[in-house]
Image (cartoon, rainbow, N blue to C red; front, top):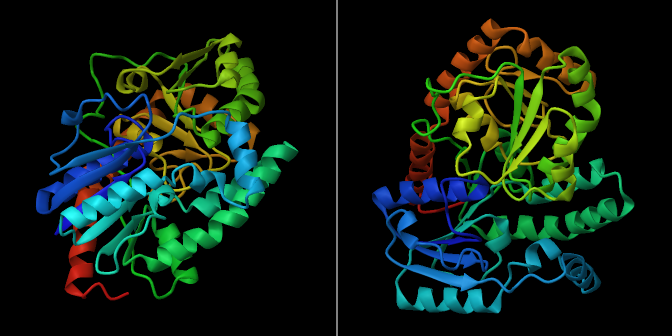
Length: 398
């Protein structure tokens, strides 16, 4: 097929949603002709396109310079729109999409995430929507767990406005992709007529493998995350307040490294706590994971599935996660990682691992085997290609 992929940022193999986009783009290019239309901010406009997988054309549409986020949120709410969706609804992007669709005979448009899925497409062009998260569910969970009234109220309004649009945009799609069986079942209950397929998140099992040249530092704990994503900030603050003091009392030599891009002020302040290091953006997370004894995923909200867990498992690190943190991944607590939801239990589980290298090694070996079998990007790419083949063989009937 001739496929146009629309993304909200340049696909990159090094962070978050860009990682999924990058590897699925590579998979598509193995069997199909692929072009890319991408919304880019001012920091991405000069990025080299040669870092992308093979694409026939690459069109970039500049996102407007960001002003006051709070002002934009208030303006969106006052006009009855979703701030979350309005920020990526650009007349210039619609014009570029129209021009690209008129210039080439595309069989399908693949929208990578809900935020870019509202653009118009001619009726003869198939629509594929890749749901990185069920976004209304993420907003619902955020308002339910928020403590501040402003954040709680804002996310409640966003949830109420996003949900009907998300379901409508999924309903018009010929194929909806989700990252887990749980999300597939949830959407099927709401959209029983839709074709919905699971294409899991994955990990580059060659790039993320244990490095024999770096020995784990005894007592080192790591949390890898993109800190411009609120659930990661919330999880780090929760761990710092509820768990870290308990761990320090039990293991005074323990250290905690927060590794990830764009840490806001409240995350940077954690670096003033005894034993805590905030690295900020790093060229690669692998050396930091290799040097850690335990990886933590203390998430209280979120959606989709967490790349950070797959990467830690691929590096043979012992992982402690909340139930929500490892949601959607086919891992078993006690076999591939350990799950703890109460702060006292979470802290005690981390302490247990810091004192038991044999258990760490056993969990690490099982975690590595799991990602090799079910979560390599090659396997995930095969799932995507299979979903497209299945849809085409059945005439794209829903």
